[in-house]
Amino acid sequence: NDAVVDRNNNEDNKDDDDDDDDDDDDDDDDDDDDNDDNDDGDDDQNYIEKMAMKMIILILSIILMMMMMMMMMIMIIIMIIIKIIKQDEE
Image (cartoon, rainbow, N blue to C red; front, side, top):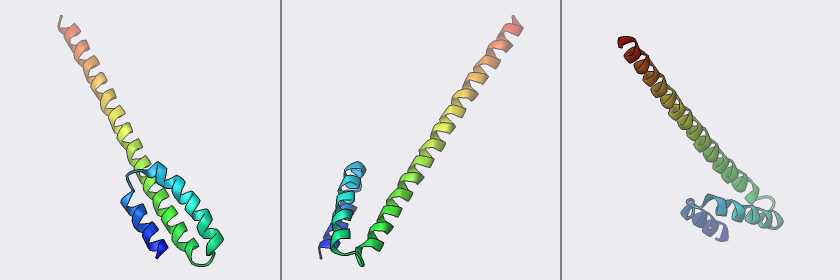
């Protein structure tokens, strides 16, 4: 019953990732002391899923940053080309 309650609380508090990580580390230590057989698989799976989600978010944010940089570079190049064309007309 306690494990089910902990999992429900973790699902409710997904917004505060940093706090949950600290709490989960403490919970993992306690669970390892109490039950080595039952809890390890679930905790490892939850940890892997959380890390996978964080990696996906990190990769997507990096891709978004790269796209923004490319857009900025393209706009700067277009402005330079427009200035060169205007100077040629004069």
